[in-house]
Amino acid sequence: MPLPPLILASASPRRRALLREHGYVFSIEPADVTESAPEHLTPGEITLRNARAKAQAVARKHPRALVLGVDTEVVFAGEVFGKPADLDAALAMVKRLTGRMHEVHTGVWLCHAATRWERGFVEISRVHFRHLTDAQIRAYHARIGPLDKAGAYAAQEDGGELIERVEGSFTNVIGLPMEALAASLTEF
Image (cartoon, rainbow, N blue to C red; front, top):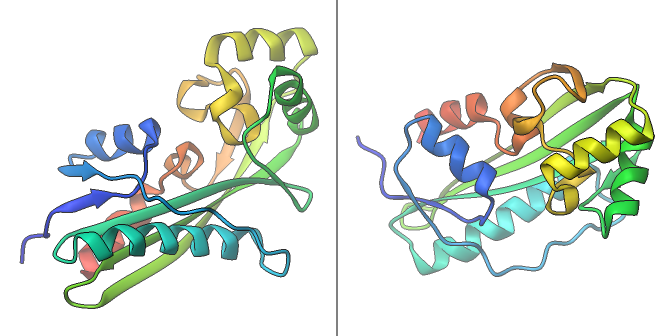
């Protein structure tokens, strides 16, 4: 059975690019939901909760479409690193991560309202950063523009400058674990 129309419930240019690179045909309708982060939930549970809310909000408007909701968080020493407020905050984030390992948690939720089919999963990748000086971090930030990126870095634009190695899905670090997504779409 062919897939129904696929809708990405996200405005993320990185997620759009990944889906296109992997040959998916889809439309885009960012979900109008407020993300939440209840303190009693783990980072993975938070991302899955937010991904589900996004997918379900769009699926209510398009019940015959297969809707993809996604949420990604950068986690270091139990602390969630969102998007930096300014360049000073971006520098501080990467300084904390330099020479260390952190995790990227992505919650993915697929929803087809007409058949009441829903599936979700969380993908976790471990990212090891190289040691960088403040000057190197500032030069990196000048090149990538960190303010719209969780953790103040861009894996898809890195080229080995900041990331030493990734354990797990590299596309997850960009914002959408394509290997696990393909497996879930096969289930549908």
